[in-house]
Each structure stands twice: as structure tokens, then as C-alpha cells.
Image 1 (cartoon, rainbow, N blue to C red):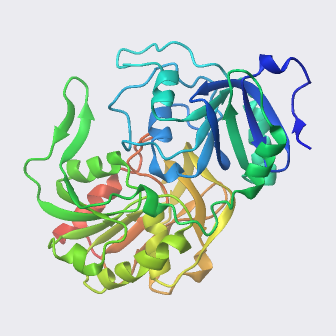
Image 2 (image 1 turned 180 degrees about the vertical axis):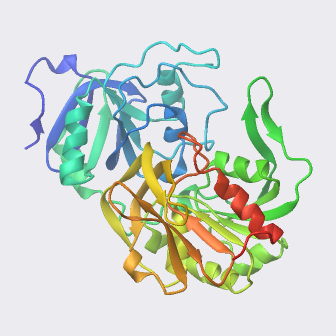
Length: 391
């Protein structure tokens, strides 16, 4: 029998619920689309960038709890998105969404959520929910919105229990592009919008496991013509474009599952000697191709305030992160040097190969949302293609 976290009362007072697989129920006010959605319940500590977070393909299969209370107060617009169709399953908020107060807003967040079928819940004690996730791990859950306040809680618990979870799930295939396309859009500037890369110096093929648009923009802004290929691309698919370098994108799900088809391609590309740069799932894919292993984290890293230490310089970078799996450092081969570590929990945040122009990081250096401490990594990739950076 489901157990509510709030006192019993008039059912009509609540139009939304979050039901966890253990029977815990959080009641609140439904926002966004009417209906229900099942996924892994996680939390994100960012104070800004909720639209980028909700459209980040790396959140496929997840219901996002925002620890910052004021979500939606700047509305929504068509520019601050990371992909056309959001892959997140839903969202949990502390405060009600207010009317937008920003000159760039073109619509209310609630209206934006409805247009994409995203189910949300406001009025929840997100501090309590976050502590529960922190202490017990990310649970499976169902977020539901019914204007009449009527919910079959036992059926929702059964739905949460029946969802298989992210471990062993290949979600990259669901968010990857279906066909190859070119990308030349660069960084956004006030008054001018997004720039166009018209005189690239290098050609990069980006393997799309769920690529964020702002990562592609950073590559273009660094002087690259970008050709994006599906995550299922073969070595031949990549090499026929005659790239100067290969980029392995971010993405969702269990890296071991995606690796079934991606690892053979990456192994073949490593043999070409081309410069290679991986981010997030791309970092994990590279590590698997080198023979390392990954594992599911109890909590994962999600937010724009994660400190990472660059072991070569001793510099501490504040980074934007979104991952629920981690590379097991002890399984890396001898020719892979650890370059970055998390100062939160000591987990691996980056590697480089000692004998090839190849490196990767676990976090999101494009900083959308988040700080820009790690933008130098795109310049490092360009320097490798230019031959000015040692392998």
C-alpha cells in the first residue's frame, strides 16, 4: 500500500503526485502535460539553465528534481534548447511556476512543458526528496498530473516497480540522429544571436550519442566544420568524410549497453591515429574501447557546481556535470593517464592516452548551463589537430 508523505486531506487539493517504487508518495500541484511518466528520479543542483537541462539528451529516462526553488521565472524561448525534442521524463519543483520575467522569454514554462508532453509536479518538499535520493540512491518513480486529483496510487507504485531502470539500458539509440548532417552554428552573442562558422580550419566528425547543441557550437566556434553522424556509425562511415579529428559526444543510459555497437567503431578509429576528444558518455565509450569498465553510481553527478582537479596543473575547475555512470579508474590500461578527478568523491573525470592524440573528460565543458572554466578543452582538441599539442 502506498504511503503519503503529506497528511491526508481533500484529494482535490492535490493535482499531482510523485510515487516511488517503495510506495512513498509526494503530493503537490500538477504542471505541464496531463498524464503520468515513469523514470529514474534524480536531482540537479544548478541555479540557472533549466531549459537547457530539460532538453539535454543525457537526461533520457529520468525525472529531474530541481533543488533550486525558483524554476520557470525567466520563462522559455526557442534559443536555449539543447535538442528539438526533450528526452527527460518529467520534473519536480519546490515552488509554483511564476509568470516569466525576462526580455528573452517567448512563452510561459508551463505552456512550454505542455507543448512537449512533459509532466511536472510543483509544491513538493524538494529538500526532503533530495535527502532521500542522497541517502538511498536514485529510485524509480512515476510523476503524475490529474486535474481532478484522482490517482490510483497502487497502480502507480506497480508501474514504478515494473520499470527496469537505467542499468543495462541503451538510451543513446533513442536520442541519436537518424542521418548524417552538417553543423556550422557557433556561439551566441547579445544582439547578434548565434554566429555562423564560415571559414573553418579543421573538419571534425562528431559521433552522436545524444549530442548537446552547445557542444557542437563550441566546436564550430573553435574553428571546426562539424559533420554529425549517428551513434551507430561504423569506422567506414566516419572515415569517408576525411576528418581531421573525431569527437565522441555526451549521451544517456548505460555505457556498457551502448558500447555493444560503439566500442568496435572507436577501437577502429583509435587505430587511424586521428585526434579524438570525448565528453561524458563519449569519455565512457572511449574508456570501454581501451578495455576499462564502468559502473552505476549511487547518486550520479548533476549540477553546475562540481569541483574537478586538473592533475597536471593543479588547477581546480568548477564544472557542469550530468552522469549516472562512472569509469572504474583501476580498470584503465597502462597507456591511459588519469588527468582529472572529482573533488566531491574522487571519481574519474578525465583521461589521455600517452601514445596517441586522444583525451576525454566526464563533465560538460561547453557549460550550458554552468561555468566556463573548461572551455580550454576545445582549444586543446584544435591544437591536437593542428599538430601543436603533443599527444
